[in-house]
Each structure stands twice: as C-alpha cells, then as structure tokens.
Image (cartoon, rainbow, N blue to C red; front, side, top):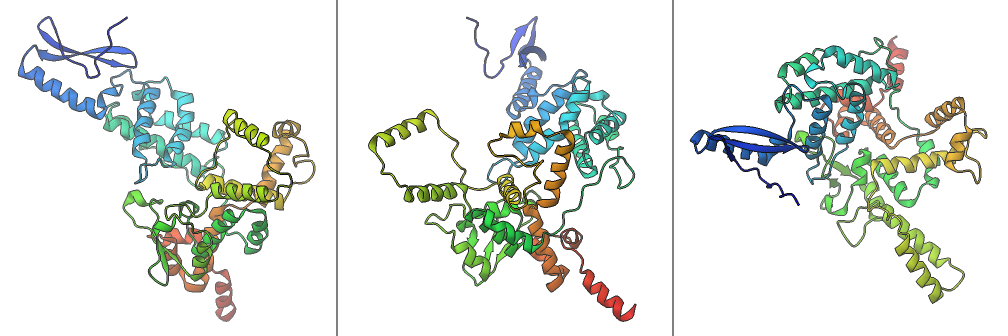
Length: 429
C-alpha cells in the first residue's frame, strides 16, 4: 500500500537544495526553494504556505495552460464568489456556465494565451448561429472577458491577453445578424384576472402582492414575516438579498393597507416561515383529500402506505417558491386558460415524449409562437405596476417604488403616457 501524501507538502533535500513536491490533478511538479537550510528557502516556503492556504497553488499556470484549465479554475472561484449575504449561491454561476459552454466547445484545448480578439469574434458569431439574441450574446461575451480578466489577475495568463479582448466591442442594434429580443411589456389586468382561478392560493398571493407593490418576483418569493417592519401604518419589507445588494444598495418595499390585508392571510405561528410556500400548498391539498376520503383508514392500508413511502420516497416540496417554479406555475395556468389548437395540444393519455415525437419541426415552431403570444411572466407584473404609478404619480414616484437609482432604468419598466402626449397635441398641435 503506498504511503499517503502529506496534507501540506513539506520541503525535502535534493543535492543540497530544498525542493517541494506539489501535486496538481494527479501530476507531480517539483519546485526549488533554495539552498537547504538557508533563509532564502525558509522565506520561499512561507510564501508557498500563504499561497497554499488561499488555493493559489491549485491554479494551472505557465505557457501550457489551456482555455479549459482557465475555465475550470474560474468556475471554482465563481462558485465561492457569487453568493448572497447569507452564503446561498446566486444565479450568476449558471449564467457563466451557459456563456462559456460554446467557448469550451470551440477553444477548450487551445492555449489560453492564444485566445485573442479574432477568436472572440468567431465565438460571438457562433453564438449568433445558435439563435441567441443580441443582448444575450453581448452578456455572454462580457462574461467571457471577465473570466479572462480574473485569469490575468491570478497570473494564469499574460495581462495583454485580457487587454486585447477588451478591444472587441458589443453588438449594436441593427448592425449585426443577431436577432433582437422583444421588449417586456406590461400585462393587461384582465388577462391576469382570468388566470388567477387556475392558480393555487399561494401563487395567487404572489401575483397579488406583486401587483400591489411592484416588487421583483424573487423578492416576493423570499418574503417572511420576520423581514417586515409592521410598527407603522405602512409596513416596510427589507429583503435579505436582492439584485443590487452586492453594490451596497439598500432595498425597501413599502406595503400599504391592501397588501397588508393580503399578507395577513398567509401569516403562520413561525415568523421565519416563508409566506408563500409550496410545502404548505401540498399540506393543504393532502388535508382536503383526507377530509373528503370516503373509505375508513384500515391499519393494513396505513402500514402498506408507510412502507411504500420508505421504499419509494418522493421529493418533498420546498419551503418557498423560486423565480423558476413561480414562472412555471404561471405558464401552466396560461396553458389551461389558452390551450393550443388541436393539432398542437397534448392529447389525453399521451405522454410528453409521445407528444413531442408526434409534432413536426414546423408544428414545434408554431407551438412556441403560440406560447409566446398566450403566456405572460411574473416580471410583466412589475412593468404593469410601474406604468400605472408613472401615469398617476409621475416618473419619480415610479423610480422610488421600483427601487431604481436612475430614472433612465425606470423608463424601461414604465411605459410612457401616450394619452398625455395626444392631449397636448390636440390642444397646441
């Protein structure tokens, strides 16, 4: 049985020199520290220990470091760096993985120092070929640049590589083959009202809370009673983490009387409970089914069901909704409210795999277009709120309620009051 390696490498003497064996990805690399027993070797070893404690020695370096090695090291850093204040990961790591997937496919085995502006433009054209919209391409290219910037700061690649990549500018609207994403528009209140009967009680609460406060979907999902200041006539909700928390900006959401009445229906005895919870939805559903049960609970049936739950456990519902699960609930409700026409819809007793296999490529495209035209998303509720506030109270009020530091950002969410412009034109035009 081989002798196990030391957790922390120790110097050894070799031909009068102090050397250190460092193992990286199963490969041994020997570093020379200096003359054995000299102060130079001691200082070099202390520097190594400092780098070892921060993980700096785990990075591949030198002229042979490939793009794949750079990306692996960067993702390890990103997994620790992109976290909320409560140490939970953000969605940025997933965004980076999606952005660098085409890079890994095209240039994974290329030496990182050889990845230059022309390579980045080729990568950008490949993203356009994948039917990514212009904004998505620009965001992905920006993340690739930031990955190489981090690699340069870690001395994995020369800084000149990153500076050369900076010369590649973003795509401009109408000046590239990349498609444009449709702007997010407000959703009509009549459409939302028609969708509400197809949602469970907690998702309806999420929708109504967004309509009354204009908060982001993620902020509504993490709402807890312990995070709400109820001392004043207008309650104040300060999310534990939000979109701009890493920039040191505070987020305050004012909760008026109508929203207070809504939230009171979801308060529990535990202040730390999430107000809108799929777990409590399932508990309520099971309680209703149990109360409507016609046959008695025989002991043999209870024992068999208990054994089945142990042998075939199912994933338990989470304590809160995520932005993804919240959006899926809205999408399913829209499908029930606006079912696709017969050739496109899923038939009775037809599995999803059979349904997808039956549809032709043209029918799949038609189905996607139908869903795009007959679905709305939770973020559109924020746009609707912003537009209503801007029309009734002005742009500054919309800016404050949305939590924007610049009015230019608010104008993206709040549609301009075209009726006001038409009235002015009717009088003086």
